[in-house]
Amino acid sequence: MQASDRFNINSQLEHLQAKYVGTGHADMNRFEWAVNIQRDSYASYVGHNPILAYFAIAENESIGREHYNFMQKMLLPCGLPPEREDD
Image 1 (cartoon, rainbow, N blue to C red):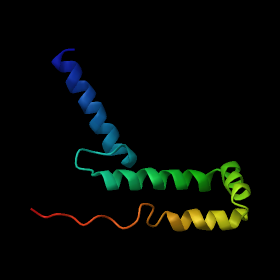
Image 2 (cartoon, rainbow, N blue to C red; image 1 turned 180 degrees about the vertical axis):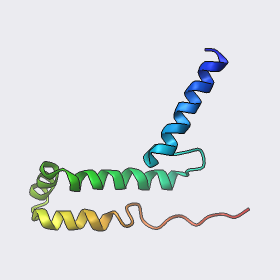
Image 3 (cartoon, helix red, strand yellow; image 1 turned 45 degrees about the horizontal axis):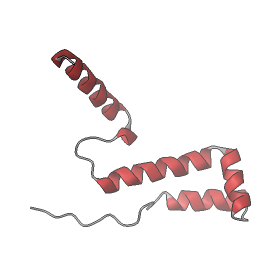
Image 4 (tube, rainbow, N blue to C red; image 1 turned 90 degrees about the vertical axis):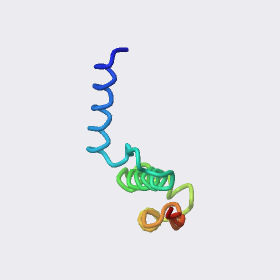
């Protein structure tokens, strides 16, 4: 692998990270990454009716109730953020 190849790959990665929030970046911590993954999952569940219907049947709830539950879970999908340690 040549230096130009590495530069090209890194510039493509930086472009993707700037364009799409879910791909992360160098300063993203584990909690922020987990929150992005959970929110993306819940948004997908709400946006695809067959998946939403599947969850509704599996949990014996109405589709509207499942939609509401997923929207509520999107607020704090991984609980409260950990306290930051300021150096």
